[in-house]
Image (cartoon, rainbow, N blue to C red; front, side, top):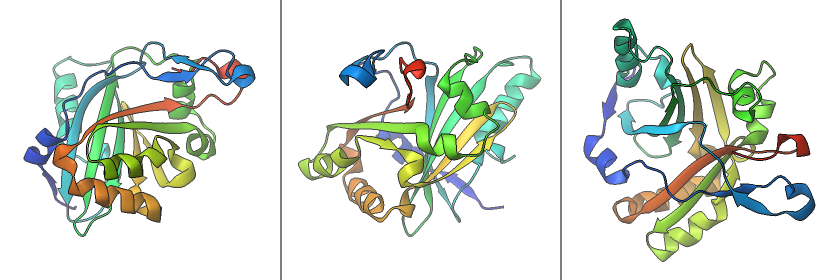
Amino acid sequence: MDDIIPRRRSQHRIQRLGFSCRRHLRSANYFKTKQKSPGGDYLLSPAGVDWLKSTAKLDNVLARPDYRVAHALRKAQSRGESLNSFIFAVNFQVPSKEPYSLVLYFATEDPIPSDSLLHRLINGEEDDSFRNQRLKLLTNVVEGPRIVRAAAGNFGALVLGKALKCGYHRGTNYFEIDVDLGSYAIMAAVVRLTLRYLRSLTTDIGFVVEAQTKDELLET
């Protein structure tokens, strides 16, 4: 099994998690007016970030018995705590000479609404085509060098599965998406540029399951 080394200092430099201003998402009349409105309540709350180094590319990290996040959750549940916890993780596999992963964690103690697009994304029994067509990454470089802001601006709203190779893993109490940032040459170049200025960046990151029909609006 490949060794995982948490990069604690780098993790601290990345950013503290929190809620920024609400993003504008597709409104109830979007397909008529193309207007967006402030998003509603979040279905998942930010729970943590890991910046990991390994000897090989990391896939399905939450399934690993040696991984601290999954271990901590199992330990808590053995004490009768966090019994309803569900973790949604996005593992960005960073292209570099040494394998790195930026893993973002979101969590909830409440059941995910069964009529939500997020529930369909996680629990849908269809193949991965829905997931590849719907999960959208929203980014905004709030502070940073102009060259990075210009490059990243081309990817402010990106449906991950359309542009990048993604793997999906459903566990008992988690759902993980592994995103290979090196699978699209232009994105890989932007990532390498960004890493050069990592200490001076402040970036907002969010995710939404894209609504593509009228009955799927509003987006949240």
